[in-house]
Length: 294
Image: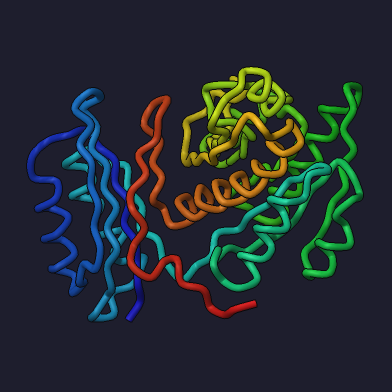
């Protein structure tokens, strides 16, 4: 039996859940997991449904025959085959902890994605990437060649058919045009618990303020630096006895975990843009299971 996921956003009104449930039941499908949220402030409704097709109804038929219900409720919707892995491009500069963590999770199946390329503005991680049989592209970026460099980046995205770009501590600011073109499809990890301590050296700022908690934030990239809709955050406790370098080392673990969780939410279609915010539904049972160990 094929396992599918249906994602829906639409204006809030009564009857949406009943219409979706009746449609799936009529197509011989059994719902295995469902989450929904009705935003009273925006009047928007969000829903994610996992189901199995018990009578062999395929993706195309499900999608085409749902059009009438979708139109009746003014839905934006999509059916997804959960066996299909999202194609991902990872971008990194000289801090490799997030990249290495993602490669490990990908290798054991904890992040079921298809890493189609790694792009960097330095050569530091070429060998690591190539040893994983993943194409590596070094695209140098300067103030003078930035438009050409971004054109190369977009060419890689287009050639690979990538669905998502992950900035795994990529230390170059993307242009407004690129952010708009890839809206909702670029995830960044910021080494701070946003909205506090923005910019290039947040751990130093946190140290100077004597904070007791440091954290990391993963968000969708927009033209407003560090202001994109937040997907995932976490923190770790620190004390007066620790140095700025301690903050950096402790923060690396949090950054890696937060970025991985944000990607997990996105690739399983649990993340929905809601204006300047996001709706993040809980993970379906079994979605964290790894294919293998080590």
